[in-house]
Length: 484
Length: 93
Image 1 (cartoon, rainbow over the protein chains, first blue to last red):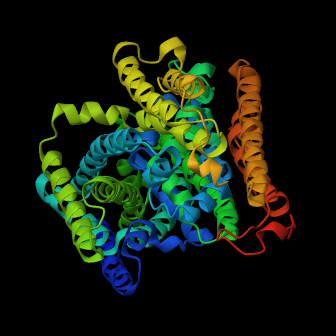
Image 2 (cartoon, chains in turn red, blue):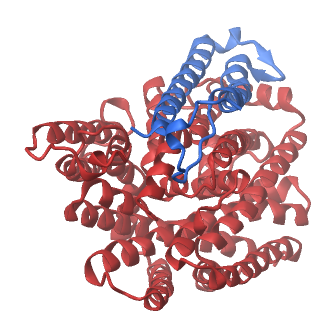
Image 3 (tube, rainbow over the protein chains, first blue to last red):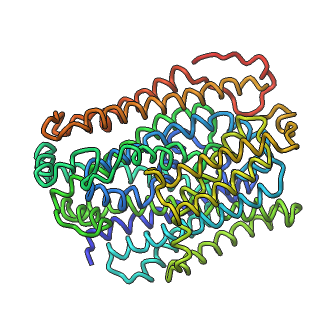
């Protein structure tokens, strides 16, 4: 075991653990448990909001998978990753003040609260809660497996033990602290991710003998590595551009991101978050993927993409510094997982149980239920991560694009188009999910674009057409009250 | 209509406008300059010019544009319902 690397990592895990326990006291003493646990009480300042969005969005793929592909394909993949710069400002600008104001007027805590009040339809709620639970559960499990593998590779303990360490640390602070603990740990993790990027980029440039030397070495090996088209010329402009929809503007439809747009304290916080978030996400994406490309000169011949970043960190940095840098992907995984865990349990407790099973449940029993549902989901994820079933891996493939195709129009048009109604929303969710799954299975990357493009277009068509032709196109009650 | 929604709608359109500009900048520099044969590439700070302008300069320019948009064109409004909402002026800070 490499103790020099393990000590900083361990310190990081214990730090998160303490934060979870500390913030849990604040939840205990506060009023309005549901709002506090799932939303942090709408008190997020600008810096915290920006960091929590960055940390939720930045996952294992930003730190391990993405740079691994950049290592193979060259600067073209960095260009593709930079489509993510817009996520920093686009979601907040589009959902913006209107979503925050409407959420306060109708007292919404989750994305589904908003959909329920907007469409007043049981099927919208049930379909949304079901797709959120299924897709996000599978993507949590995938991230969970990634977290276990990371700990396994740094520490040398066996995979089940690594998974147990990971699950334990995540669950303690999510269950104890809820959203408030999650946003505070997210903030710390966002800082770790930012600093880690800076260190490893600098270390790699120095080890590679400076940028001009690295680029000329790459060009000598294969000139395509420094073109926008990728080492094997597989990155066409159309394909790369279609990622603007998948990882750029489509992110508006992801529930774990849009719930953030309900939680800011005031418009000043929102403004600050846009400025800070754009800068931080741009820096991390540019820095990490560029490091992957430069790493090709420092450690040539790595076959497995996912091993590039850990090997690079150990090669170019002193052990203790490598420990800090490797805490970054772990931070990314943990912060994504805990946000998702909370969304899944909120859609079960709040959106299904309180809405349809027991509306008169007391504060105390809701509280107990929230803790136990979060714990049960966590334990379930742990069990399936030990021996991941094929179904789970299959479902995870759709979770990102599938959720976007399902929710982008019911949320955005629900907010800005008065004629939109329940028929349109149900049609949009069903069309989006089904066409995504079918296309991805039978005709992936149709017409040279990423699979997400066609389902998003189809779900827009379904939303608009069904809203216009359904008889019940009278104004919704939110519209009548002037809330939308 | 709630007067705050007018502000919100205008800002949402500005966000979309900025994203469109961002895309054009990114696309024009990368495929405009990067589509040439590698032998004809220019280099800035050791990086190919297409990459420098599209990704490095693009990142810096759009971070600054977001700052300008938010500081000078976005309006601060209260999120809670306030009694004198009707008198809310579109004041810029």
